[in-house]
Length: 402
Image (cartoon, rainbow, N blue to C red; front, side, top):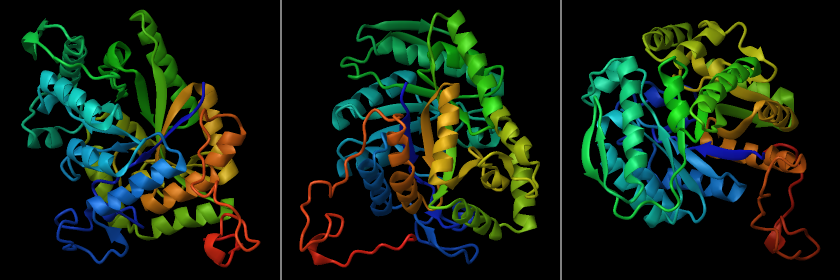
């Protein structure tokens, strides 16, 4: 089992701060700021294309896009970015409760033809009733998962290419059909830590995703889902969602993490914790429990830092350390059964390069990657006695920093 590496597209905004998502009143469309936060970047197509191209060049397999009120639509954004890339896949997040399952199946089939098979699906059931109601969804937490169960049954049913009937509590479908099924079928990524989520993951997911908890807690989740899947006669693979801060030395990485904390005053943290504490998501509550709203003990396991979760929902932990230390932690999770690593960092363009140029070669050296990225300069001959990394007679910089 090798490692699959994925990056993240910040379609809600990006920057050199953990509070960037709230720095604009309008999500960055006209760049009208609420607070004078520096280094904030709007999620326009030009910037997102830079990240997508960097991810492809560095050897990431796919990029995850979020879904929700404060980000651009994942389907539209990624199909546009597919025109700027050649091999990169797109892990498109979407909410089953706000779209017909037959239409979703048809959209996936069209997407696969347009992109020549570069779609992966991230099913987000939703853990915040306030957010769900914005989209017209008024079901409670457990009923949302019951609906997701039916939704994915219909999607897989109509992908058969034959008329499909379904009579459930939430969906009634007569002769549902995707006339030209997607080829290949998109892999389904799915996450959820609640008792309601586990059986749905076991029945339908190809890859079960967990947020970045300490290894022992991740192992418990893997054992739980694996056991449920075995009862269904299925095999589920596993992935983890983490941020990264990887540098040439451990000291540099931790200095970067501490700099991110400098933007977080006590009032900002308290307000974020209060809002996140209202979430119905069991996974979100587990993230909050890792740090308890305090910045005193944020290294909750070796090289695992919970600082992101002080102000951000969802994935709240980061791998922090030297390139070798980050690779060590990835290898540790991999030994537990984690195959897919969905990573991100602030800002996403620069952190993609730190990880891609520092950690990916190390993982390749350890034999954890099935395909070793090829440098675009690998075939460029030396010129004027200089190596290929300095073409055109440009001075060769050898400093250890960036």
